[in-house]
Image (tube, rainbow, N blue to C red; front, side, top):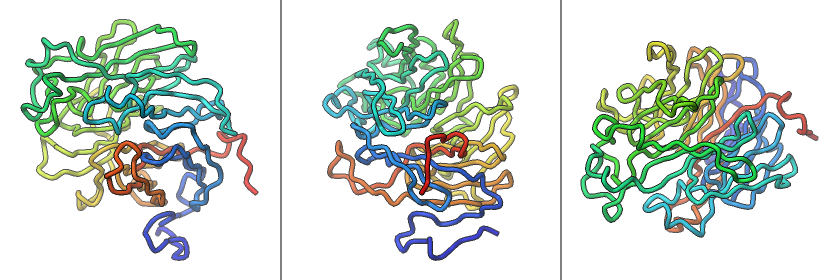
Length: 368
């Protein structure tokens, strides 16, 4: 039974809602309010803020801790939003590393950067970027809402690896490896962009894991050839986010499920996929499917005790479940903000991703 202290359940339904210390992976949870002013929060298991970083840019879209204890943060540069027609809220533009006190160690800008950036094991930076699709390819791209291009143009993703001094050492263009006939857009998405990448990650062997929402595809890119080593599409996927490699060789995916091809209901789930046969070997979803649903953003992290931390991003809900699906920890972000680049929007407590860290991963943390 999950232990819920009613004194910690606030009247507005946010902050700590459930906590079972015997079944949880006890540690500290990092998250960044997606529409906030650039404050990154680290909370303990009881939902108390134990550390914050105040970044010089609003999130574009999140930060995470490196092995050295520093924070890698993607920020949003607001002055050139016109480079991202109709979806500037997903823009980045700057990546920086800061120490525990928030001191900026280095900063890298790229005008096409959006959604995600990772520091690679070799010390370089991997950026997810966006640019116009070659005009001759636009008519060939299948799917999407007809007539929703940007003055006849479509955009697509490319990846760049750069040194911290700004030298380009590797580039990969999605349109050179995808097939516009078979890598079809979801019918309900606007044709302003073909792929809508939302994740890049480094695999243990150095190859690159990517996620493309608009074509419901997760893939592994061979770094040496640029070809796909592995691809998974729809079904079973539906506008997924945040694929993560697991120590057992499988991939953990937050499957948003906004427009499923194999089910009439939109619903979200977290799935673990075996790369050898594409079999789903574990999943978390609600029995009443629509009780768990985030149409955009979101993610999941497999914890060392076998539990899974889930970020139901659109609603700022962070929760932990056991292998059997039992809820053992739940926290809802109380930080509601109106995005600076969309001042007419209602306040939101959305969280792009969240991460749990053990005390041993936080050598600089001191708690009074």
